[in-house]
Image (cartoon, rainbow, N blue to C red; front, top):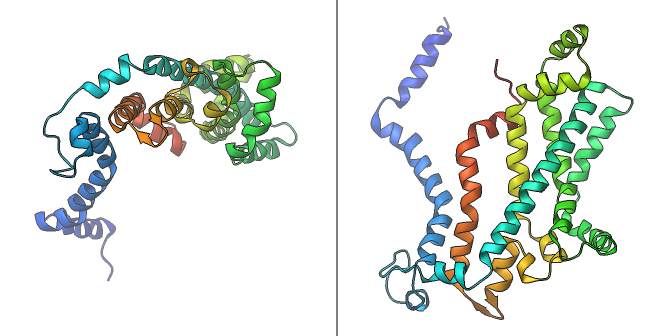
Amino acid sequence: MSKPNNQVDTVGMSFLDSVPRKAVTAYLPLLVFLIVLLFPFYWMAITSVKPDAELLSRDGNPFWVIKPTLGHFYKLLFETSYPQWLWNTVLVSVVSTIVSLAASVFAAYAIERLRFKGSKQVGLSIFLAYMVPPSILFIPLANVVFNLGLFDSRWALVLTYPTFLIPFCTWLLMGYFRSIPAELEECALIDGANRWQILVKIVLPLAVPGLISAGIFAFTLSWNEFIYALTFISSSEMKTLPVGVVTELVQGDVYQWGPLMAGALLGSLPVAFIYSFFVEYYVSGMTGSVKE
């Protein structure tokens, strides 16, 4: 005779009641995962505060700092164009994210709700456009940017970043809009609301987790993008963080590891800050769930 489901679940979960079993099956894997995940940040942090004598020395413990210093941060902030690179990155990322989200909302809503002929094929083609690697597109885009007179300007990045941001954001929002009950919009249409009112007052408030998820994704990609920024920008004062840190702090075969790690550490903080505050919305948006 089979056991009831609740009794089977209780017996199965009792396996983790003992401390040794829980340590082996839960805490130990989590600890290993945490160490692997956080070790790059720890290495960046200790390298950014190590003096050059310790960085170049083979003696001592490489995983610890004996005499920490803030000289690398001072050199990065006051002897390079790092503040300007940071401002360029913030400006380009924010504007590109806003433009991409606006276009993606209209595209995703039109494909999922207006039901025009060929809407499924259009949605599939938009997602396939995201699969095209930027290493193929940057050559023709460079020709377009040069002909428009936007070379070596922030607008070159603002106008080219949506080419890879809009396809994925549209595909992500399509899945989220699909999870919103269509009956809500039908009731609004019966009450006399138009499509714009439905989008603004019904769909978008329900799709806030999806919008946040798409926004975080777009902002992260814009913040870390390297190929377009390297191709379309040449002057030092117009560079973004990923390009500026690599090209300005590496002179020939000489790597300034202290400022490099300090720049990488400071550059990763804004993205980590955003994820830490919106991680629940990000997971909810990726799974396409709608909270009742």
